[in-house]
Length: 201
Image (tube, rainbow, N blue to C red):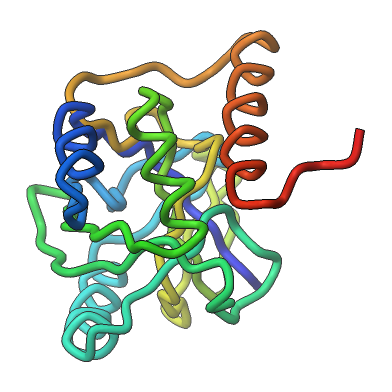
């Protein structure tokens, strides 16, 4: 079963603007995932399982400079290189939080992500993995089981966890009004048109 876990990612807007102005790579830091906490889907990731998977991720994809993720979740366990937007450079623990340094890549999807950050748009970070779950009816939770395998972290628009957005300067709240979604869609349309991918009206 494909498992996805969402968190907001906070980014400093001034850092993004400086990166764009100086044509330098952008590295953002934030919470990638939280152990032992119930998310809005009622799912809980045990600390022991996440520790094992983060260690393997650091020793494998991160060390080999291939810890890539996509802009938006695909319905697949395969990372599509055409949609890659970022690369995880480092992971570490802060209490029950998995922290990470994330480099935004100069790919089409990475440029869209950077433009969203520069516009002050709040985006989420979301893990993608394979595994099974076990339901705990008494606590109203679903616990990820020992067969869980972490695949990557993707940037997404709507996280299911509170406090799961990466921002540059200040903490932003999750979008709740249709007007804000329209604004995001307008910005994305402008970005896509600037790359020659204007939608048909």
